[in-house]
Length: 293
View 1 (tube, rainbow, N blue to C red):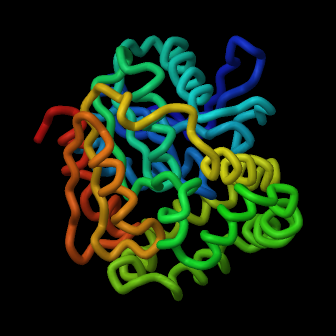
View 2: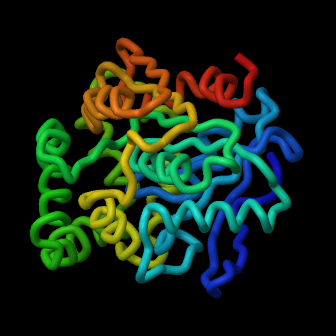
């Protein structure tokens, strides 16, 4: 495994951006964008496959998560600029990006904002445009509530999802994980119970709340409003993977994005859920994104 899990750089505007490195140093560079709520530590799940595939994974904390300073004027597109600045400081020219779940829209933002810097774009179980009624309607009730509050009454986010949900996750990450397992479909629960999966996810959840729930609440607000670009205007190829049994982000989200993008390849995997797909298929995902098949 390259480097450590606790790196940070200073961005041009003075903010600190946290990241972790996994996989093989000097390998094909791939920037990883975590889900919600999560942190750079989520990419520990990629490490075995990344080492096998010779991939250098740089996993980035979004502003307000983990080691990254908050950014009051943050947007999906401004995060793409942060990623480009980080790559420059690391001496990386072109690189791939991989967004999982709520990290998917940030991968799309990079595809729109910095296409010349990208060698590949992958999205796994990616969140769709939840600012549109159809997308949020297919999600579980707590996700529907969160995105509806973020879109229509954002001042309620703090008392509902900050003070209550966010602090519960911060204080009880292990119990939070057990609740997720109990509500998960069979494919996901089987994977989530594995010690080598459970430990990184709990660590990532705990780290996501290092500064409190502010980063997660800002993510909800940003994702619940128009993203600042149109999928139809993304010209570079996008690879999408989605589990047929995903109950967290319905497969319709990826179907919608694949249809709207100019150049997309979508793989719908039967009997896979939101968590099982990236765990069980990361080797082939990394192979696709780095040209290894």
